[in-house]
Length: 469
Image 1 (cartoon, rainbow, N blue to C red):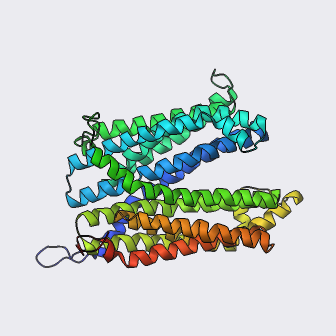
Image 2: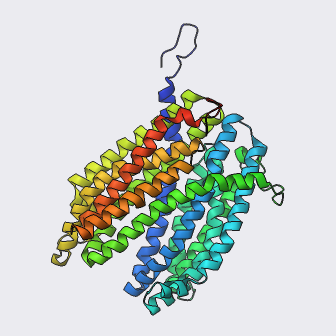
Image 3: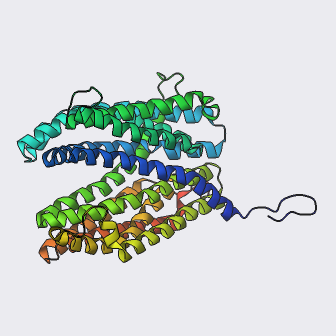
């Protein structure tokens, strides 16, 4: 670094400084997302050791649980841009941040009650959907032990948003990695009857996840209560005090986020159901390609969360240049990473597929061939998936969530799902037709979000006071 004669250091290029800040905040978030993904993956792997029926029932139950969970998660993610903006406006905005956390926890409780009531009827819901009665019974018993994980998980997400807004996400990463190991141990003990515990089967996995989620929340709650950088916020002080304007502001900002995430997740669920109508090998190949894509998606997801915080803090500080740098830095990093992942999926698909299937077994040949084809589409899919994720995070930093939700509905379901059905069944393209539809939906959403970001001046009220937000 250049040093002037007076001894003063040369100023750091602001783009380089932003890149450093983005990387510093993003890498713990990315690893935390990977750890959360690993927790679910280990649950599925251990259910598979109980047999195919247990795995099928567990998959049914978890998918039923995941739908309301992702909606609640999207709603509560509104705490992140609200806290980031408050801290950008005033670095030591203790009272404002505490109010957002408190009302976020209130909202988590309010969400959990109807979710628990709904999921308690899981067996009946699955029977109504035409599922096998025995699988529905096992899945229902699993969900009745799993559903209690929703509230502590929501609480953990709110506290993680708090420490991320303060740009200190490392604690969440450390706690998550400890809980991944604990979750494996708890599954091993409760599912299979080890360490003196009764063998509970699939419901044992639900208990393990509930305990793990509770410990995640309690661990992070302890950290924010005693750690020097967090304790001055006194997040749990006067918890009973209502702040209805803040509560409804969270709902107003969070509902579109929840809608966008629900539209995106459900189109992938629908794609799997459609693939199952084609053939079992097509469904298996699709599952492999989606699993590989979901692992790489943890990086743009972390960069999206980072963009929300960095853009939100610049937004609160009324720093237009800071908003621009924060958004584009995360976007460029994401596209560079996803381009690399796309290259790997296209050039070495067999190596990636080999982690899931024995490539030398003749009975796997059809699945492997389809998976190679699907991974070629997934390569293109990577670029658009990363672009839409980070662009959505950039816009959330500006508190812009309603129009992106409409884009998600039109892109994923209006174009994406319609194209998948027409190409796969009407035109007889099968599995590749479904993937073309998915890529088309992601492409249109990413382009629309990107164009909206280019026109972000219209979204900033302090830049154009008379403009509609």
